[in-house]
Length: 336
Image 1 (cartoon, rainbow, N blue to C red):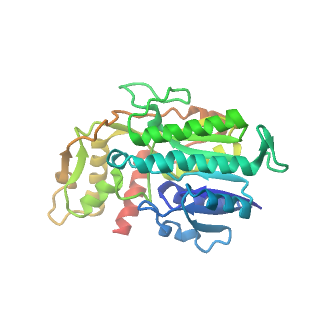
Image 2 (cartoon, one colour):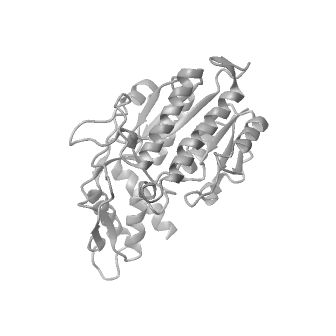
Image 3 (spheres, rainbow, N blue to C red):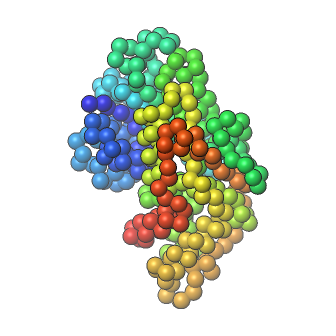
């Protein structure tokens, strides 16, 4: 039986990935290393808490002795690395934590993996030839797009926030360990995720939360910033494919082909809530929309070309935005 290390598995994407991965791979044990910062919650993994193939360890990916001890104890056959500081607003107000976790933390993990799995550059320890490090990253490393075009795996990096700069740095570290040492590494870059278990600070949970609380719903700037939205379970399936079948050293973009402005997102959610949870006043939730000062350096548009993952690994998104957002709203309403 293989044992896989998942970092940051108590966060939004990781806590959707782990149950899916355990169900899809009955021969795998997952060790989840998570520091449980404000964005991590063990309750996100209640459905696997009693699974004998799931082990939770509270700890920091920057803690090298801890990471080394886990590699020694569990003899990991692979790493799926989610752990990251990820909220752009927080990276503007406090960038140091992003550099520490996203850059130094990634370095610590991949360097420990290299030393555990390899005897010298391009020489694996016996039986570890297929051990793999999968690094989960973001489309924000590519910067911003104009009115047309899509990010591809060969788009030059142009990060515009401390968050995206820290993720770009971590991507480059992973790339360097593949090319310099021959480490079996794969990187995925995703578009904006949405779905169950997302932290309340993010756009879609904020809209739902504020609406249900009868509070002003804040929309940055003119609300015309565009993102490509990816349902979190579709992302988990893409990561699984890249981890199991991707080519070493390659990058795979994962996107939903669901471009929406923030205004469209808010309008759709308000429309769903108007039907599912009508306001006592009889008014639409749209009346709560409030435009606020724009985020510093706010990228205008992101959109991903996922054709490489589709063609080479036969990935397909099961949800479009219209279906996925209803499931998402239903989940948050049930939690309220």
